[in-house]
Length: 259
Image (tube, rainbow, N blue to C red; front, side, top):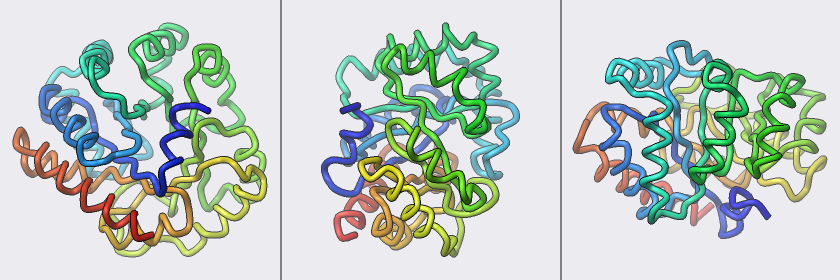
């Protein structure tokens, strides 16, 4: 069993996201440590990109701040090396195909495996084009995580059968961001995915921000992903954010325990 799948074996999984380098890499490191201490089951690390097409304004702004601070992919790899000296929580990179291409796909995947990453999420890579990334990931023991959305329709079963690690279920159309209400079709998406791949963990993301939303989405699936709400805390509190992020993660974890 991959470490990512294992993250779902202790109940409903909570998967927080943050953008590396916002406001700086030292604060990113402290926030990741706070997340693990608060019970995060799997952590998504965003590698900043100048045109993050799946992101709403909150995470777009975080990307801009991180890039303006001079954050590079190599610096993020060094950050993970430091973290892996003593943290064990599964980690996945979330970024865009051009970041991997420009670094060199083989070089990127090899480095990610060497530093102890567990997977990769590329939201702008269509299912039909994933193999050029999936093959090198598979060769080095990384899971290339697939996404499904309300528009995936009759492709959900096929995507689920070929998925690795976990299936990222996008709760609603559009970009990431906090929402007051979430799509009612997500339960049907999960049902179709589970019919095709009964043992595949499914986590719901995009728009979840409150403990109540997280609990409702986890009741339909195996876990919840939260990004924009955490990135907002990073922006609001800056270098003081890790303590607030840790408290938020603990609050969501407590809600998921009741799902």
